[in-house]
Length: 133
Image (cartoon, rainbow, N blue to C red; front, side, top):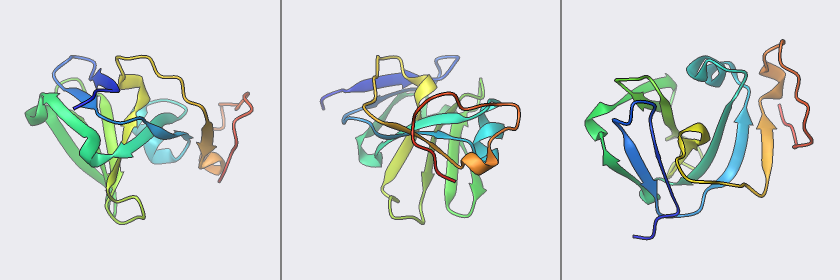
């Protein structure tokens, strides 16, 4: 299996690798991502779920269904938000990876802001990336 990226949680209990390139980099401003990350937004990139391999700590991963069909996964030891997926959408076979957990360099070609209408009122978007509500 070729490895394009690998990453881990804050405490190192969960380690993963990806066997494909990441796509669809988004900075999500929805209230669930803001609360889940404790930040102005969460940044994710996506890959087919079959390309994600949990190398260590699979038993440390916990899941939370934040809305119908949407599952967020995090480390049960340190609380790091790692992945989310939507079993009901057009990309039900894909998983999104929290980019802050990557341990390898990654330079996306394109990025965009999503759910901008829900953004934190104290945060101003000061870049030129596309925006959608």
